[in-house]
Image (cartoon, rainbow, N blue to C red; front, side, top):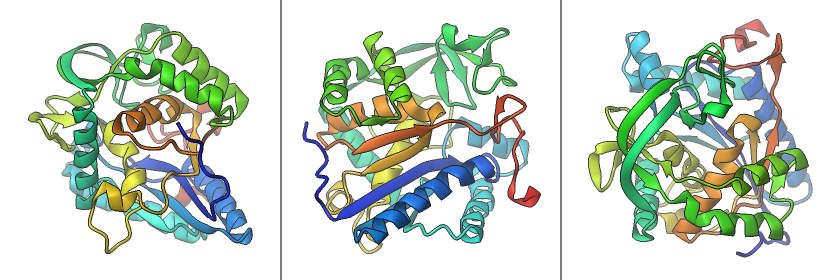
Amino acid sequence: MKSTDRTKNTFAITTPLYYVNDLPHVGSAYTTMAADALARFERLRGKSVLMITGTDEHGQKIQRTAESLGRSPQAHCDLVVPGFEALWKQLDIQYDRFIRTTSRRHEYIVKEFFQRVWNSGDIYLNEQKGWYCVSCEEFKDERDLLPGNRCSIHPSKEVEWRDEENYFFRLSRYQDQLLALYAERPDFIAPESRRNEVLSFVNSGLQDFSISRVNLEWGLPIPVDSSHTIYVWFDALLGYVTALLDPDSDPMLENALSKWWPIDLHLIGKDILRFHAVYWPAMLMSAGLPMPGRVFAHGFLTKDGKKMGKTEGNTLTQSNW
């Protein structure tokens, strides 16, 4: 595994791809303003900079939100996304690319990447049983749950029991390679407290994770089995790659990775650390692609002791400013 070339004169930075279950709030703005400040700094240093932001638009949470509002999922996304674009304009955020995971170009990139991982022998069909948080779009260990089977990140939401057949990614195959990455590049995960959290998680033993869902229409179909939908996180992480495509380029991995890859910095909230610091590098290893430069996970903005978020409804939105 080669380290990112720190002498190159380009700098690519990403915010999370924000979930569009509701309009953006001050927590979304916090991460984006931090990314914008870092991008401006690198521009002042004379580097060619690419700042990526965008929206994550697939998954069960979006489908349920749209249904509750009497809209189709696509209509819901099309209504909410302009709210993010308007807020970034109001805050004078100088982003270079805005990626929507419902774009057709993104679908091509996801399918090509999936095929690479499939060809590596890292995807297989198996049964999935466990507690699932729709708000996190993630299966939860019982040790991570609050009393009453509630999610520790979304305490107002009960998790759901799932027992279904899914396609799995062989995450366990990459435990030693991940530990080698963290040892070789101590600054890959920052700050140190988050690095220690990831090391503890990986050292405790990695389990394969499901990358498909059944009985879910809102998402991209598995290329080898259209009865399954690609898990939203497997889809969304690849938005960082799709965003690298020049507007006039054909949507192929080769074109997307030709100039800006690897990303220098993924700036995220701590609640999505495992996806970016464990699942994402393992997926890239499987596909034979270089690692990003660094994953930095900041803490939460809180209100009344709880994480501020759209799901909990305890946010400060643009209309409150």
